[in-house]
Image (cartoon, rainbow, N blue to C red; front, side, top):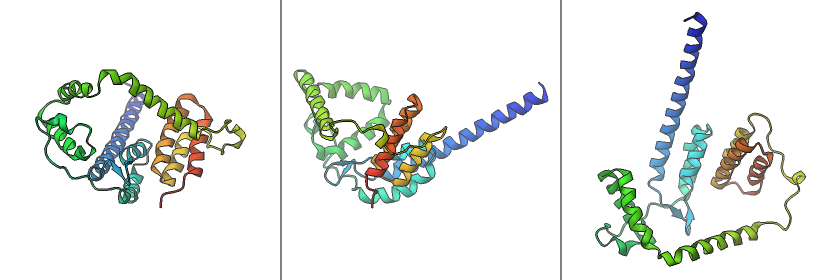
Length: 227
C-alpha cells in the first residue's frame, strides 16, 4: 500500500466517523423529542392532529437537529396532555373498537403486547383481527367516500386557473436550494410549513423542478407564523 493509499483510507475513515457521529447526534435528538411528545395527546384543540413527531423528524433529517428542542418548547405548549384511560383492554376488546375515548387504553395495551412478543407476530395477530372490523361490503363504498372527500377539498382550494409561473415567489437556486428552502421553513416555525417544505425539497431533489421549492416558499409567505 502506497503512502497515498494510506492517506485516502485515513480520509475515508474520518468521513465515516463524522457521519456516524452526526447520525448518533440526530438519533439522540429524536429520542429526546419523542420522549417529550410521548406525554402529549395525538390531537388537540378540537381534533387537530399533533404533527410534532413528523416535524421533529424532518428537521433532524435535514440537518437542523439543533432546532428541534427550541421548536418543541413552543409547540408542546399548544398541545394537550395524553388522555387518561378508562380501563385495560381485555378479552372484550371488540367492544373498545371505534371509541376515541379508549385511545389511552389501546396505547397501553399495545405497549405491553409489544414487550411480550416480536412485533411481526403482534402485527400478524392484530392485522387479522382488525381487518374484519369493517364489513367487506363497505370496502368499496368507503374507498369511494374517501376519494370524494379528498376531491371535494381539492376543488375547494384549487383556483380556476393555475397561477402563472411569473407570479410565484422566487425560490433559492443552485446546489443547496433545497436545504435553503427548508431552512426558511424552520425559521418560520409552523409545523405544516416545515412538513410541506420537507416534501418540496424531496420532490426537487428527485425531479429538479424549481416549482416545488417555489411552492414551499409561497407557503412560508402565506401561512402566518405561530405565536
